[in-house]
Length: 289
Image (cartoon, rainbow, N blue to C red; front, side, top):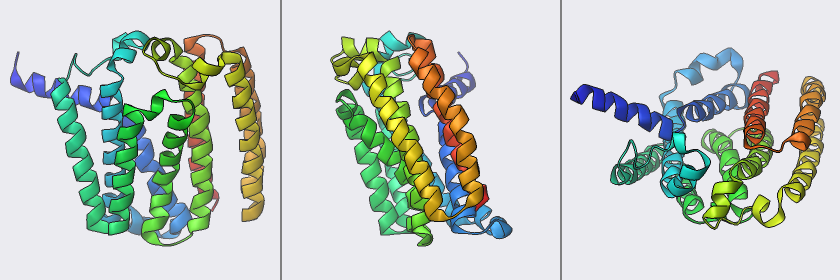
């Protein structure tokens, strides 16, 4: 087999392992937050061409990539049950190479953060540690793992305000939005993966509560999410944003209907993807500022 083909195949599988589209969304979100919440769209070229902004976003994306890698490393047995056609660790990339890649990416992400400031380095270190702890232990506990991943998602937005030292409260609102969407999506993913999780001893909410009770909990979380949306909009005093959230109620209601009807792995997967659209809508709403 030609060496060039092996190299191409390795990087192709590495991109799959690190969820490259998700990494693009993380970077995209940070740049949107910097331009529309921290800076000003009339001066967007300054932020787009800022080397420091590139380093900040790259460090976050690299830490996230390492998190995806270690998550698949620890989940390989479960993934053979839940999604056998998508297993990469041990099949396409050797396990020791996966561990080395995880370590190297974490070191690179923390080092880039340190180049910017010690605060960013500390945040990156904490994020890297929590992602490892989540993959190793926390994701198999009820709700704890969901909560940690949601906190880290919100942190990926907050870190922009921490670096630029501006508009912290405004950025915090979007961080709460990202946290809310993520925690709903993470619980739905647990419902999607219940078969493999149960076989290997995980104690996620759908396993200890059952699907029906977990759905009720999700209805409760969605109701809180809607209340928080309008509360934040009222605090910000932005009528356009308020109208945007009113329009968003329509797809939210449809989402609840789909959740009520969902009873197969494919339907839970559709709901998980639906949450990504909500996240995208939240990112685009930053342009209203």
